[in-house]
Length: 150
Image (cartoon, rainbow, N blue to C red; front, side, top):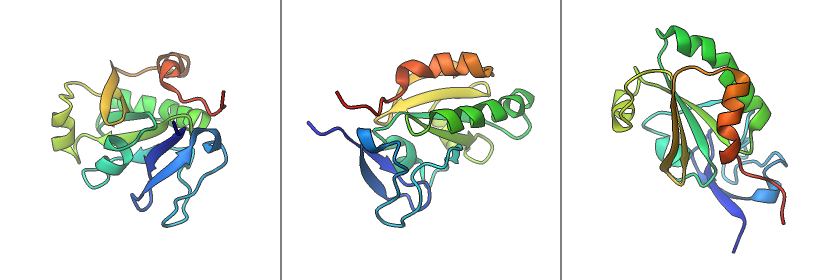
């Protein structure tokens, strides 16, 4: 069985296969040659949801937020810091619920911020409300991919 993971390029949305052991080697897209990881959250929209979340075999944590939300703004730097620390063991993404109400509705987002971890397009964990760094890291830890081979 291959240890390669399918993941979308945040620049051109092409799907790429990357071996788990090579995730930390700054992989680039086979199509556009842009980095697959930037150490910061990527914006999810209806146009790129399929490639960045639904088809990703790498876990993706999506922050459902809105510009007017105070707790969302307070959590944004914490989420960005986690992206910087934990990518490429997981993709970090932000979805503006005001700009993408159909996607927010699809996942029954009732309060923001809400974090959802997806794997293979399926929701595997959900956490409503803002979190601090240590709390967020602890919540994400069980879902991180290891880059070492056995």
